[in-house]
Image (cartoon, rainbow, N blue to C red; front, side, top):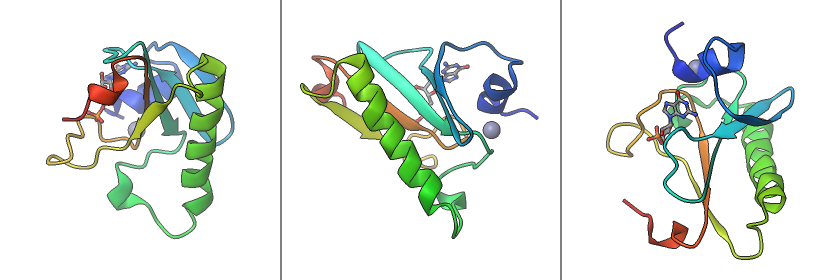
Length: 113
Ligand code: 5GP
Ligand code: ZN
């Protein structure tokens, strides 16, 4: 398995994991682009939004609900945050394991590539 996020899930690679349940895991981005930068990923390897299948609706909804909860936990809910899912080369996706970015902090609103 060459997927770096699957290695984080298995414990083979280290990450600062801040949340985990039976469906998703959240950890801090290794190169944060704002004060809060968390990645929320499915525990099952799904390469991107393009590989989502019928039946994944609850999983995707759960990723969003976990983002909401973590935003509150980080204390950024009120001031706001950016949720981002990059897909494919032109979408700027660099890790082929579906992930939801939770980005917050004073500068988050200026970050849009
Ligand atoms: P993408 O560009 O695919 O939407 O975002 C991938 C993100 O994963 C980037 O923000 C990058 O910094 C982060 N990332 C890549 N490799 C690792 C890693 O090994 N550990 C952690 N914690 N984050 C990573
Ligand atoms: Zn993976």
